[in-house]
Image (cartoon, rainbow, N blue to C red; front, side):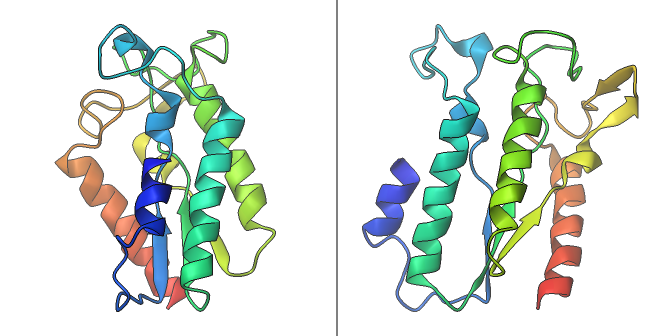
Amino acid sequence: PNLLWRIRNGEIPENLNPKVWWILIGTNDLGLPQFATSKYFSKDLCSEEVVVAAIVRVVREVQKMRPDAAVVVNGLLPRSNIESCQLSYGAPVEEDNWLAVKNINKMLKAFCDTDERLHYFDAGGAFIAGDGGSVHIPKELMYDCLHPTKEGYKRLGELVVEELHHLI
């Protein structure tokens, strides 16, 4: 809701008119269960449907404000809430961030497929290593299983630039 409020209340300058808007939001709405007792994070995490609804609302607001622009909805990047950065370790979906991310990304892609002005982009595969049995996020790409490192951002940036070349 904070980003939506900011968009609606003048934080996008009138003269800012890019051809493409790139939306990469939502992962924080899943929360960080390992910090649920911290004063900075709530133990009441958003459901997958609420995360998608929030992203959709922001996208629609941007489309309303800049109807001639293309909007790219970036799928959530992989994340893990266990120290080893292992993905899909068999926990229930409410405890397994990777399952939630995959479900959210599937819903975001379906949303983007309904509007020719929207483009779905998923760079998640660039942050995953391993084979079927042991899939994880390399620490050199996301030091804490959530935030990209310098190398992770470099990899993401290269993919974004490549995608922008296709769009403009």
